[in-house]
Image (cartoon, rainbow, N blue to C red; front, side):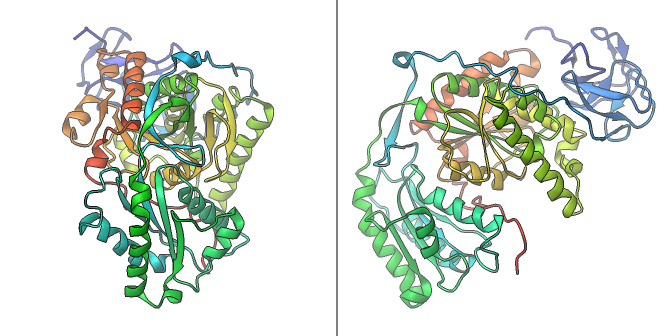
Length: 509
């Protein structure tokens, strides 16, 4: 292993460095010319200069907060002496937007995918049972359980399974409000998702979120592989389970007949996600995923960054890369929506980071956001979408969502993501059917501790064994392999049955 400094200085403008591993009190850190005056946990920050009370604390060359008291060189910098304040950023529009260095079409990578009649390409071949309302969730799960666990798919080797997509809403909501739009748009996005070869939608019958309205709004029509029904109309629980099972049996031949064909990776839409972040996230896995994102864009593909509260304070880095001033303004409009949303709900955007984020070394939302945006690489930002809107632009785009992982990823998948890369420093273990989810560990200690859940380790960037570019290339190669059918670890554990969580916004009456 190469000899590396025990701390990482990310920018010459910084007045803190990050511990590669635990630093004992009294340790001389020659590279930055200080002695640690107290123990510094791994991933946490150490002051490399004196910082007066009220002065900015800088990491990544950016302000991550302000000293709440005088900080001496060698001190641990964290919640006890670093506080959040709003920072006025210069939002330059589009000055860093550059066309990608596209790979010639003949040289672009390919994967084995399922080309659908819609022209879209899937990476998996599931059947969906979608509940329109919480009241039809039990029936939907019972139908999926019959096929997955009671032999209903026996001999159907080309079908990955039957997924029950259930949720806690669907009634007592205002049909003119954002929450209803988000729910119906999410259901529509999943119903049309290329990772599904067949869909059955089940309602109760008397709910606000009427299936007939969804069909009318989005132009959905019944077909041999898209069917709908209501429990009250069919005649109760047992009859509906039998009816839904019967229509799925009618679909099986068509769905099982699907075969993977060689497709360009330009047909991949990758959700960029982070959860359980730590002090290394913005140094290792996130920039490595950013490099892979840029690679996919260069090959003609699409990547989606989301979690608007987790770009707060770093949005100026994205407006600089916006393809047009209109795209930049739309991003800032979503930031302002979130400011208002937080205020109306007696919250503040710095309520994020979470307990686990702080234990891992993150202190303020500014610090977390600056690391989170690294997942988006350096490509120009081509579009900004509201939650679950269909992504139509190729390249790097942004979708508005909360920072809560299952809600964010649900929106990304509804928007069209057929793959997910999920970075984690603390060890997130979720999956998101029907899109396969690749877990990327930010540090080697956690990777080794949770090796059965982590698909790739990016911790070599921290130890100096690997570059961001090398790690990013490994991620890109893994994306192609998983898109072609290689199972992720979360798929092997059958994660993804409980993570369909549409964003609930507004009053429940």
